[in-house]
Length: 154
Image (cartoon, rainbow, N blue to C red; front, side):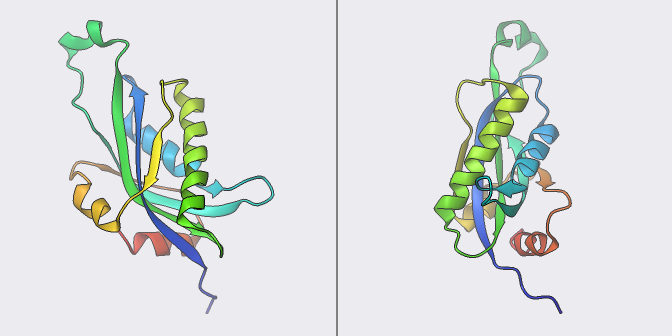
């Protein structure tokens, strides 16, 4: 029997503007992979993000496209982040994942005007506010103990 991994579970809400051509599944994968290793060089730690991504706005109709070319779509993710190792606080973990997600979104989509908002929320809000139509995402090939710890909340 392997020892139990020490992990902190943080319910998260992420929102950001994305270009019109952005795909929701790709956005979700970007978030999940950005959360794989958090922290600073030399002091990094493994993490696992599981949740659901969704649009927070209505899609732009084809007849609206010419006027809406500069418009952005508003996307969100509700889920759970499992961070490995002892001594982490929710605040530190959220700061680390905020930085990682901000860098990943800017790297993929460029300057969308504002950095993604990433913050801890109540566990109950994840369950109650996730839309039925949201797409499931998670960090692929993550530490199995982190996967188990986070998925027990889903």
